[in-house]
Image (cartoon, rainbow, N blue to C red; front, side):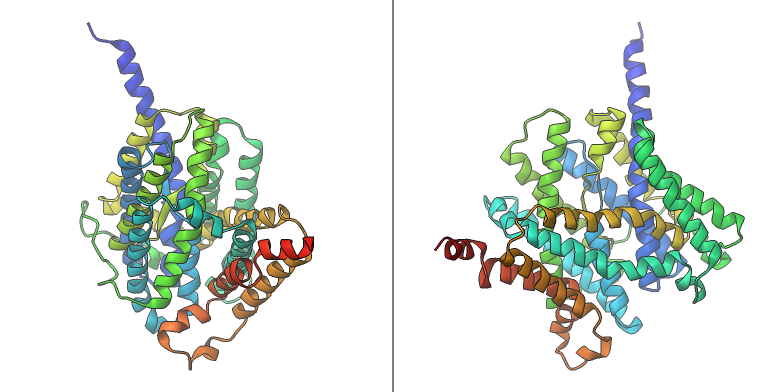
Length: 438
């Protein structure tokens, strides 16, 4: 006799797998659409970028499930990683952007190898302790500050038309309201689908107002294609980009650890030290894969906890199905081509809330510290230096050696390094506390 319970279980797992894939798609679709235009990519290049992003996100998720932390967590482009891409892309001249992409490939590869090695060493906690609430708070506030201009220029239509466009501004506002309303008011699975509904609504409104550009449509030459290795060209070494990548990788260690921790709490499961180490190793492998397939670096997404909580899907099988579907979608150019037609302004509007939350998280970290004169001085000096560097004209660094230019011209990295030095070397909290006691 046929076991009907098994059939029902398979159908349920399949439906839940589709839910996971839709959730993953929400966190993937905007990446190539936002990053591609920064580097002046053609519609065909953005389409193939989309294919590789789908493939890498699915592959990295499956690697973590089978060889990493073995928890129901999706891998997707990290907000900090694509912020680095946008930041460096907008700071570089058009003629230098091809080299920059190849340097970012190398940065991701080296950052991935670095994290994979750390996964085998018992020093995760020591490295994580470098990133105190002051350091992470300053980093996240600097990140949001440097990107805020790009967001508003796009959502107000300035990038597209050269001036504020009423229709684009209205669509962006409607999209943000939809995402906020669903995220804050909805229940169940709908609560985690706010960005997806917002993107669909914004996309439809762009069609309704006739704002879709015909030149953006890309017609693939075949229905099946293997994701290409080193699509941006052979990796190039640049000390500034490598340092930026390694620092970003280290900052995100706390994200990996926190995500694994909260998922364990949600699943009511005790997490072992080995799982943390394997999760870090898996993230290193994910970054390495991101580098060789020329995409934005991936990381375990903590928002998966919200998906698990609202849907109640805690088993691994549905996520395996969902990740496999996303990975398989990367082999079909028509899927990537269709998703790549998402308007840039719609993509930016969908990211506005998550990136606002990043800055909010930074403020939360700083609110948790003691408001001593020493702490306030460290925060104030770091933010003044970092934000001050953001307003420096690009040609101010023309005389700086090329290998150093990508560091000193980047307010985010200068502010972070300055904060690390003050916090741990120049004015460490322990010494100041001892002096205060004396």
